Image (cartoon, rainbow, N blue to C red; front, side, top):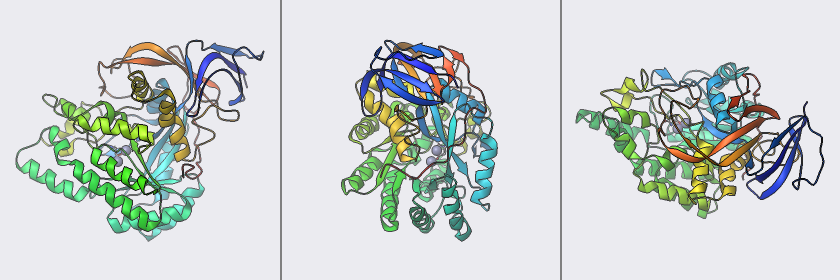
Length: 462
Ligand SMILES: NC(=O)NCCC(=O)O
Ligand SMILES: [Zn+2]
Ligand SMILES: [Zn+2]
């Protein structure tokens, strides 16, 4: 395989920033050296002077083609992984779904069939458990053996993905016994359903009521309950898509006790708010996701949590539905709007914007977007860092380029952008996935089938 050299860039990892040349051989990082200090022969040289060289992003929360609310997420593995690559993400961990009444095996096989041969970048799977029973519990160790080392349980969505506390406790016990990580969607679903019914009965049908009924206190209550259940089970816990300040406080309190409790937030909770849900007409449907967007004053708490390590990971929860034909299913009844936002393409750029604005450091940017998710989900040391032996998943990033995010220019298969018209400083220039050039200065060179399934080890964050 070709030898590739990247010269003169500022190499940024979660641990350090150092000007260095990077040599890539056989799809892996072969060596780093002070700029110009070694005279390596290479078939291909990229000049990264004035640019950053960062690890490819690891997005630990995506939903390609996920069925939801009578429709399915509009990005396939082909379109979604291509869009991820455009945004500097070179690994996704997608959620395989167990259908109720079916087995984990069937759900996982289904997900392999969707992804196999179609991905532009490497991928792995978590498993959504929507039907906890004895047979399903017995299947869990087998999945861990196949590299599916995390399971997501839902306290929300009664009748769909929801598990009750007893089922969650049982699944946590089983996961802990195999070394797997339990992920929880922490919202009190049954209580939310009561509030939904009451709101609709009052004629409150607009998208903004989605945010009002999914109360912050019901996220905090569920987060508290998930933590206590994990304690009882002796299980580590990862709370997905944290949006409420009150839920974050529960995580912080648990971490202050030294518990193995981790949290993720997403760009939509850091950059968008209930103001978007309240946009005129039916526009707010574009911003319907769960947990919901919160009033703007929650954002500062989330940023603080990212700085203090009460939150460890920023993932996208990419789950796109087109406005036309999909979000529109909920006109006249907000509870029928399919839940989810597009975002897999913009995470690296939006977090870099936070660097530009002084909210996080450059190293924290890489920690949150690359290194921590790789360690959390058993992908380190192959992914999330730049070191000899690691996969050559590399991004040359121009920190000065200015771009405007828009549906007219993005690559996700969705007819709107949640960040339409937002200008950010910084842009991906070149992307390598295991040494192969996927993107270079606006030319897409990737191909479906390059991306391979990554069996994961257990959490290395503990
Ligand atoms: N988050 C969301 O609104 N949709 C995807 C499913 C989930 O993660 O709960
Ligand atoms: Zn969720
Ligand atoms: Zn999700």
